[in-house]
Length: 100
Image (cartoon, rainbow, N blue to C red):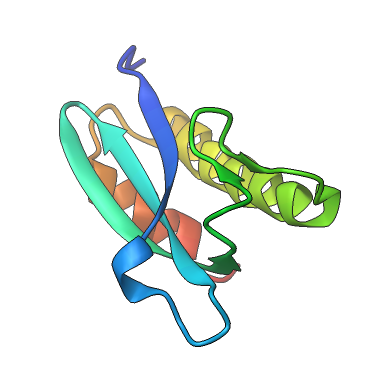
C-alpha cells in the first residue's frame, strides 16, 4: 500500500473578486510533490476567510460544505489506495469529480 501523504488545501483567489466582494475558492491537492488545482464551486468573502484554519469565521454551513468536499476527496484517495499500487494526483481529482 502507498504511504505518501495527500494534502488538501483551499485557496481564495483574491484577483478574481466579483462585484459582490466574493472570490472563488479553489481546491489544491498535493500528492507525491505533484499538484492539481480545481474550482471548489464555492465563493467566499475574503475578509472572513481564515487561510490558516481553512475556515470561514462564523459560517458553519459554509465550513460544513468544505468538510464535505474534503471527505469526498479523502474517500477517493482511500479508494484508489485499495484499488491500485500506483496512482497520481490527477487520478485522485478525476475519481473525486466523477459521478457514481
